[in-house]
Length: 339
Image (cartoon, rainbow, N blue to C red):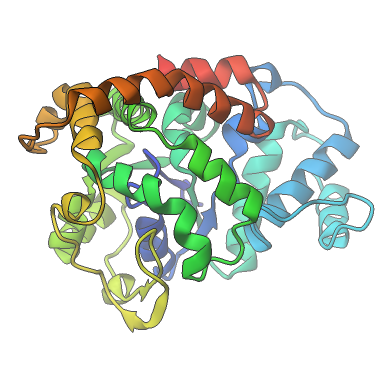
């Protein structure tokens, strides 16, 4: 049995595209953002043996998030997957501890097998802050770290709330509001710094491979062949034939296949202001230089820069309040993202 694959990185860095590519492989099945670490697990849960009712609810949440979507509510008394979960728990090996990480591992491989595949590929961007826990839980895991120009991720974050109008009807109105509250150029820039810093700690780890989004879209076959070699799986021609799913700027177009060729500076042409570019380049300068992202000369209005900084703590506080229910341990989550 081969180890699982984890796709991580700052949000809006091409992790979804990579997940879809990997899902095209004959051996790999993708698991889309269960948000286990952080949302369903915290350090306090490590090695803690749980009761079967707790394990049952955890299984139900994982199944619901994978098969029905993250925003689908779970009713443990009328759960759609109750029979399946009861069967899994009734055959749970006596010698295997019933812990949250063991339930999670069981779920990943069960889903892969359920879909006639052998390798689970879990994509949750925020797992970049939990690489140590992933490698501790899955010593044979492989980590794909996606890195994108922070100005590109910022533009995507800025417009992400518009996805509902572009065909992503699964995004609730509440989620649209949360996404709009979350956005501020300083917040996005600091989170990008934290994400790339967290990934860079494992740059020399044998299980870790870093992929720049610009390399994936400009030379997809060469980049993907390198990834497959690292994962010790054969490259397959059909992996790049993925549907053109929607972005925060474009509607879905599943009739077209392949990798979209992105403009290198679409972030400048499609909606970032001089203030946003200035904030991003100032905060992310060192890491941008490390990854070869060239800065652009901009001359923002001083008044607008000051206003941006004045409103930052207000937006940050509002964003924190809107995301409290997504954190199993608030202190641990904030510490990882702001360290």
